[in-house]
Length: 112
Image (cartoon, rainbow, N blue to C red; front, side, top):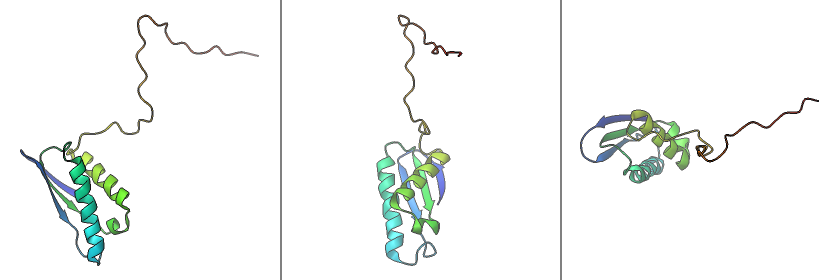
């Protein structure tokens, strides 16, 4: 998938190009467009204003719906249309030590 993004004032708008080279069957092309429209609708409150045109490639026909959604979000973030989420973080940040609590120390190691 590729994305053409033009930031503008006003609401975000979506355009799609899914040609017969992507999938010869209309059912397959419509599935891709339906998944992208639904993903766009869910992301709309977070999106910056502007025009977004998605050009699907032939790999989109073989991709699952979840793969299409994640690829769409990834290219929107890369283009700057979506704010970058803190990716790769698996644990919440460690709370800051309070002035009343003792500082954290490493456990003592035995030397046998």
